[in-house]
Image (cartoon, rainbow, N blue to C red; front, side, top):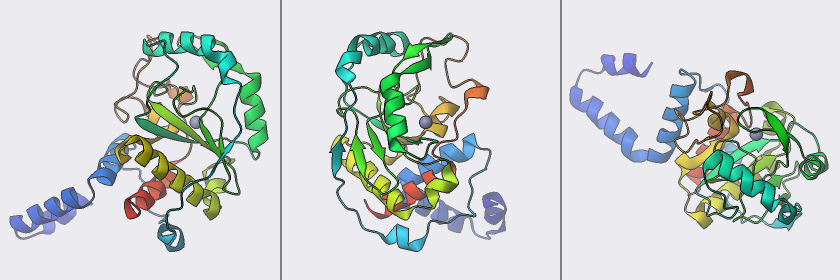
Length: 258
Ligand SMILES: [Zn+2]
């Protein structure tokens, strides 16, 4: 569509002016969306614009409710995990990216208990026992729980766990998530707060669906353990959380509330 429009322009200078405007006005969001457009072959869903009331809702600093996982008991397991997948046994880090997910459940407690219990996790060649985790979880009413210290690496987003903070949103699917403006707004404010705190640019705010597409979308993607799929998830393991519409709304809100 853009190409057809450009062909229709009479004057090349108009085209250049439009291009310059597009490049200078919104570099971060344009970077992000261009990457995703590429990944989805133009499949960005423009049929669901962000509601005006949500876009206009001002930033409010998040309040973090402590609900810590027994992460200190997992240090040896995590150290081995990070050495195996990322070549770095350290469990402490300074985050430089954010990855957003939804839980596919209707309750935060179920997810928390699942993390504590642990289970089968992909180890690069097969499945072995481990403890999944995320840093933060936004409940349906907008309450933000902190599950890990923000300088302790989590295992929630395979491929970027060496760099990213992971944020879970309690929702069954994208449609369920998009139906709760309060939770959406709490998640947007939380992401903005994390971006400011750690100087993370918008182009490094990912969805798990971005990460699963691998290095063509997420340059930080790394997996030293998986020799068959070192640059992304196997096709059958691709993720849909938190969804392209959510991510588009998130980035539009971030852009409006810098
Ligand atoms: Zn996820």
